Length: 117
Image (cartoon, rainbow, N blue to C red; front, side, top):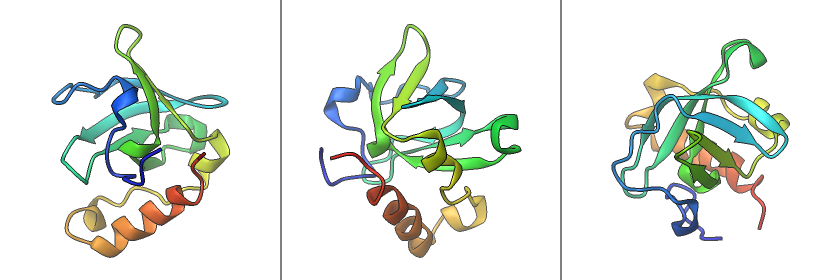
């Protein structure tokens, strides 16, 4: 796996410019929510996932590097994280997200420590 946690891996099936909003997100052990927002910016690609009632409406920021594969026909994104890893992840902070490299380092560090090799 590449060290670029903020970029989609070539094996995911992601097509640049594709709109992933509304896609369901599947952890390794079940569904966690749906994509509320996403970006495919180089070295800053991510998904903002609305976890709904599963963890009381929390939004989480998942870096593109956590995506294992995308099934466009089923509109599902499979990530290499468990539900608990996502539940314990830093909550998405829309104010810190833009322009706060410390926030990106914090979120990136969390997922870097929880990825499968």
